[in-house]
Amino acid sequence: MRQEQKGKGKGKGKGKRQPNPPKDKRENKGKRSQKPERAKRSGPADGPKDNSKRTTGSKGSKPRDGSGPDRLTRRNTVLEALRAKRRQFKTLYIAEDMLEKQSKPLLHAARKANVNIEKVDKNRLGNLAGASDHQGVVLEVSDYPYCDVEDILDRAKALGERPLILVMDLVQGTYNVGTLLRTAEIIGVHGVVVQDRRAPEITPLIVQHSQGAAEHLLIAKVTNLVKALDTLKAADVWITGLDFGEDAQKLGSVDLNRPLAIIVGHEGDGIRRLVRDSCDFILEIPQRGKVESLNAAVAGSVALYAAWQARGF
Image 1 (cartoon, rainbow, N blue to C red):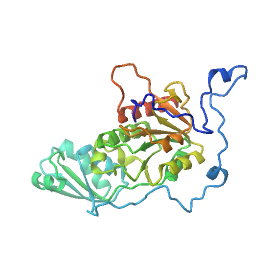
Image 2 (image 1 turned 30 degrees about the vertical axis):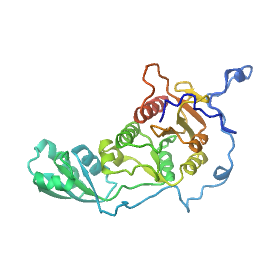
Image 3 (image 1 turned 180 degrees about the vertical axis):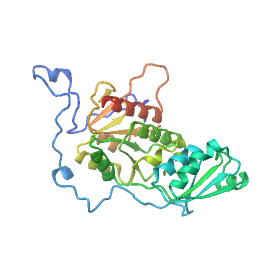
């Protein structure tokens, strides 16, 4: 997300809905609902959803290098993976000299998940982890279990909740991605959408930066982000992007208590033009300091918490 894009804003997209009409258009109109009536859409919204051909996700995608199972390290990351039980587990390697208060939760979770356990020395752990910051634990797992966009919508429906979705438009950096995933899981988003091209895989390092939160999330990896947004619109989800521009509305001036997908863009370039044009409205995070912008992880986290607050926490 690039908050330094002042003056770079585009004009309002043709036919784009404005959640908060200009004040002069509200006068003498009587009492209005806080939420505007959604304009009728063409395409998938006009007919029943066909679940027989799902093209928006990359469920069960294989590691690109074909190197075999992933290896998760660090205690929190491994513990959340074991608790989530969304991957296939091979072996849990644990330091033979680990303190009992540190090893007990890991061993308990591993036994519940029927995982093979091996106690090894620090040299073996270092070789398995390929790094020294493993905190005495390595878990061999299958590749990350991506889902489809429809699976995210199904989760919201099963919970009886309006969808709240995080969309990452080519967000880069393991810290940014991991932090956004951690925030998203904490506030209870129903899922995350990322693009499979020019975007990072959900690697063990990203899972680590998310403190294991990625293991609990539904993440759809899509080929075409604009088409994925169309799928969300067909399900009556409002699309908002974080950006500057003449058409941007300040956070706090728009009712976020609705089915919502929040797009966070690339730290340097912001949201891509076609993705921006797909937004129903643009949100700008107010700022008054001397620093030009928030980074992608912080800006996205602020917006996610604002959307959760609008729902009453």
